[in-house]
Image (cartoon, rainbow, N blue to C red; front, side, top):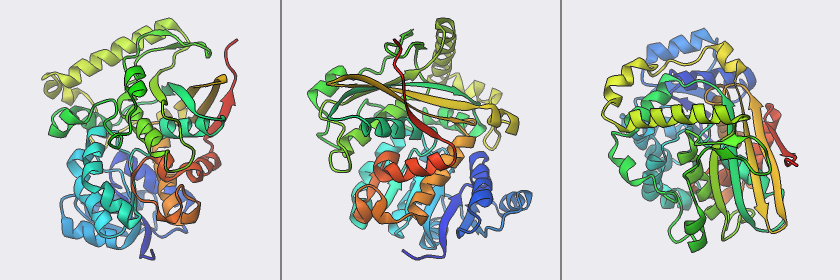
Length: 398
């Protein structure tokens, strides 16, 4: 697949897209990359601001001809232009039509479900990897489980994930959260196994899978847990990976069960943040969301550089096998939602653009709407380690 560009960063004038363009320029300026968006003046401004040498492509998310031309000229599209249920569907279709791999950072599981139903088979036939959720939603959950499962022997009974993080929300994220509730797609894409292939869920998994996480002490790891704001999309992605692993890599097991919550060192913090999380959830699902939307950041706005540098995430994974429990973690400094999301997304795109396709999970022929672990696997784990992300086994609490 030889084309004009290895990667096009689509949505480069948005907050996360700009971070992607800057990161690519600083580390991978020798890779043929272009930046794209609908506004030429804003693209020029980003290019001048960061002294980018990348060419500019003007393409609106609804201009099918422009999208087809762009996808025809590149091997991989990295899209940061959300909400994806508004701006992502034509682009994803154009990628498949023009034999172009695709990576995004969506956390909109209802939209992913719709895209799977419409495009998975076509992408699979063409050997094109369409990989959603390569940012903080849901790469740490998905890759962390993948790493943990591959460190133990035999089938895994369950993995419980506990997320600790420090970061802020951008205007784009808030727009996605508020607008998703207005999307008709959202009504049918929130089931526990909504991203699983048909007939891939066992009765045991249906019976034991529980997404209602309450404030409680965490066994074997210490600390406390409660609801995690992004557990809904993360759990759906991990469960899809578990099902797809039956034919790619190490199979997680017929009765693999996954759950996800937040991690807190103290009970008081768990109760406080749980209350705030539930309050935000009530606002988003109520008619009040339209009145209160103006009090949050607008699309294109985000945290300061200082705030992003002071952030972090640590995803802990408690793994249960026939032999007992073991624990692992995936962690990094840097705001997870923006600084690290942009870097994880860039490294995901680079897996498809410059790595040997034969080294990817399933070899060079695998295609479809895939998850980060199924589509990129150890190739992505290695690349993330090279930029400072840690994967390791951690001790159990005595």
